[in-house]
Amino acid sequence: MNISSMIRALGLATLLVLSGIATAAPDAETQRHEIRLASKAVLANLYKAQPAAKKVVESAAGYAVFSNFGLKILFAGGGTGHGIAVAKDTKKETFMKMVEVQAGLGMGIKKFKAVFVFQRKEALEAFINSGWEATAQTTLAAVDGDKGMALQGAISVSPGVWVYQITDQGLVLDATLKGTKYYKNDELN
Image (cartoon, rainbow, N blue to C red; front, top):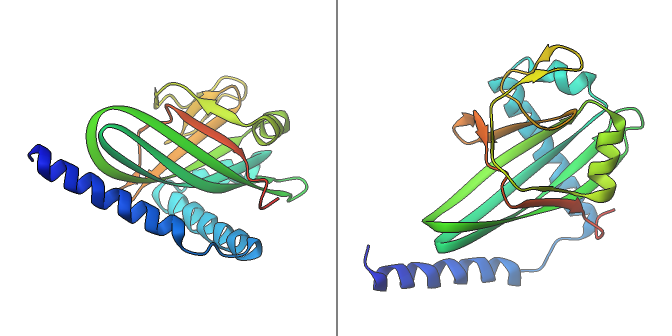
């Protein structure tokens, strides 16, 4: 691909992104409904790819489900997403956003889903109330030292917090969470 073609591709990608931003945003209740439906679909896909994950999510203090879309052109890229965190004891839903920044040479579009599992209520509350930033990549290392539990297909991202990452091709054996921030969506809560 020559420079002229890359510039045209960048222009087209920018136009597509901006045209999506220019369309009218649905009302808050519609957005919450769409996020709930997307989250249910992500969980169903996770349980299909990794049946043991259902028991892990059901026995956790809470979970969060995110859908992400990212775009990378030449030296920079980024992504946005939305999701929902659920406290299992109260069934309270907290709607959240995520933003991702990428650096390095490359081109492409990436879509993935992430399911965070919180073994302790305090970890879930910290995630919801303080947000969370991922600053490193991590690979599959799925043994919980506290309970001696193996979480096949999940990765540990902090004490008591596990993540399953899913793409259109299925469960991912490593997670690319570098440069990602998760925080409350004040418009939907």
